[in-house]
Image (cartoon, rainbow, N blue to C red; front, side, top):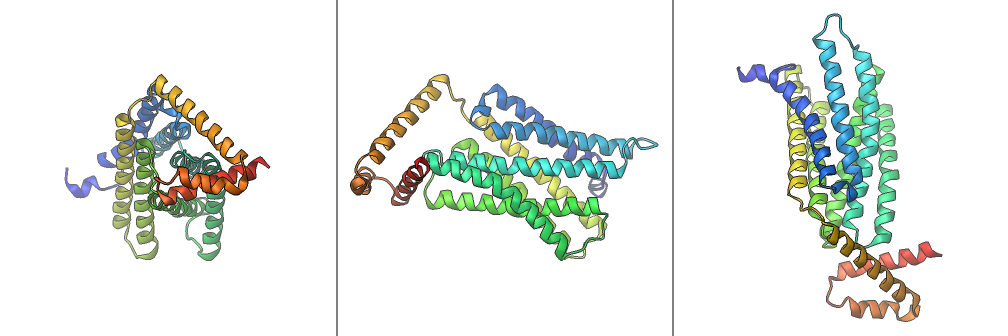
Length: 302
């Protein structure tokens, strides 16, 4: 089959790139639950199930429109279903980003809880605000449901990429350990989001033809497929946490909490000096995080 034919809507490659990531995500969800990784990343397991099922449903509805006469699904119904999916996807993505930040800040429980809460609330709010601003500033030639879906999609990728970039820079600056699976999830999200954002910029600001727009769609679909394969790779290569490992981590966390209570319960005037001597061999930037975490815990206990 000629390459020009393959890069056309409804070609074999088009069908594969739409259906395969959704099927792989459902397969990924099964692996996550078989390996008990949903205990550490419950939102990621839900994300895989919802994205896989929704993507497959949208694909089947598209097939029902194009390959049945009369069509079983109208274009208006498909776009409404896609809009509902986008709303759910936005909520799940920022819950997942909050979960990643929580994993990065795991040694600092108070900062972890605050950061996760802020991302889960502020992220979707920023997406909706950005969608509203874009709608006011730039009229669209498309019908309202299509225009709103496109604006929501664009705002989602802008805020998502910004937050992921902040987490990467934050972890690099403070020399924080990611954890293998957390890094893999963030890497897949970042690659897919940044490429989608780049193709959006080209499509919005350049006079692209229909064929060029179709090629951009293939780029987005291919990169999303790559992101799913990245998630699959990191899920399969992340060692299983045994029961003894989990018990050991729980006991270590209890010990750390007890020592923090003892340090914070002593004399406040000498608290900073004692923590500085205990952390003399640690990174100075991580020491700052320890201080911030302790002060936030004291604030929350008041």
